[in-house]
Image (tube, rainbow, N blue to C red; front, top):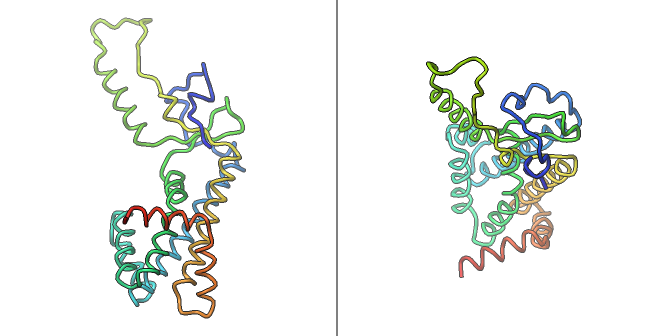
Length: 231
């Protein structure tokens, strides 16, 4: 599991200047795993749109354009869920919803992979660092306030300026086992989506696909949580 930099590098101080995405070429094997997770999830989302097209009895391209017109990712997901609820019977919708729930953690991780900032430090030659850009915006604002508070009329050459440092607890350290797990989770989510598409179809193999999903402990737990929540 990824660890905050504050727990991995004790006594080492990174500054904002140490945070740059321009040296990822130093870790090519780890960077490749980032792209694998993102690519697998792009394929999985394509399969999800294919499901939505079936829910709406429409062409893939029509549904794709409709969903792309929705700015919010959550809005697109809510639209597909609403279509599923309208098109499916209760058992099929429960199976759909449970399967999607099992994918959430992997999907959220993919979002971090795609939208956060990756960087490296020579202090950790076997790792990549991941930083939420929202934190860096906050840090930039803190630096700006610190600069504005400096009284230029009394500042003399040689005086030390106290500036806010980078919060190492906001920087996550990813090593090979972390990438391996996330890649495995992404592959599993993609496989579940493919099986779900068959399970909700009218193909001869739909019953077998349904049984495969229902026999999964992950799907069973998601269904149980839903049942407990409804009760």
